[in-house]
Amino acid sequence: MFTEVYTIENEFIRISVIPLGATVISVFDKTFQREMTLNFDDIEKYRTSDKYFGCTIGRVANRIAQGSFVLDQQVFQLALNQKPHHLHGGLKGFDKKIFICETNGNQIRCTYKSRHLEEGYPGNLEIEISYILEDNRFMIETISKTDQKTLVNLTNHTYFNLDEDKQSILDHDLQVFADTVYPIDSLGCTFDQPFDVNLTPFDFRNTKKIRSAIENDHPQIVAGRGIDHHFVKSNSGLRIIATLSNSDTALNIYTDKPGTHIYTGNYLDGTDLGVTQQPYKKHSGICFETQYVPNSINFNESIAPILSENQDQRHKTIYEFIHRKR
Image (cartoon, rainbow, N blue to C red; front, side):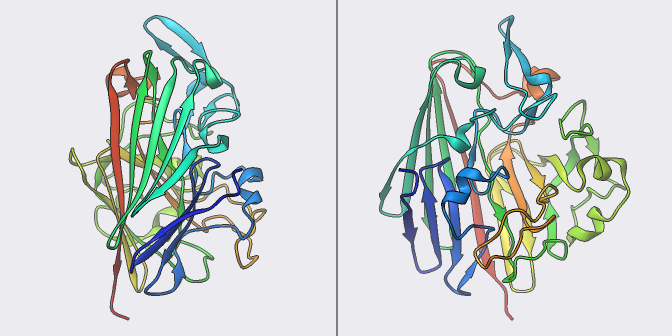
């Protein structure tokens, strides 16, 4: 049953995961006795919500234009579950699949086998997701294997809010180590060439309030109803990509993926209620969806997340919590 809860903890952090979507339902800071994510008081809500709280997104995160792509001259048509585009793996993506989970020391290991043409994607795909605690770091490691060339762009969709009341992330400070950002269309689909963040509200190279970008009338902010964009990491390898902070906590995000899609909860609408029964309204949380460039299979195949048979796709994302003096 997806209602089982798997929990690991150390002296700094406690995390809990459920098999449905290998979903992270809690990241709890033990020093401040504070939940650091948006979460529910009832596990059943993870099945019924359409906002992807804490779950694994796959096979391919974000949108694929017209739900279509070509591999080796063969056209694959996917579900248009956000017409006219395909979103977050389809009608029943990995967020709605039941993973096999087990705890082993400081980690939770979750596995799933996706059949050939599940949600329209080619190849039998095996994925392994490990949630690992090391001191003040919460890590996500993924391994993907296929028996046929396919697309794989996994991410995690946890909403972070470092405040106690979880009302808004607009007054959180944000720094993003990225010089370029990809544009989106009016329905959030990534396209074309990245643009330079200089002289735009997307320039977070120096720390600033999230509010300063959200309240700008830049056409791309308007298109996304906030930030809903892929930031290209400045360096290769496992490097820091962003830092989120409030008055007493900083969250550093590291990844070895090409970048992160930052989403400021623009479509949260108050219909989902949190643990204390407060509604999660627009901009209540922020997601750092580390991934390959969304929809790149349709405009730049050279950077697309293509996985061939007899190859492994291995990635790591790290969330590091730093306490500040009060």
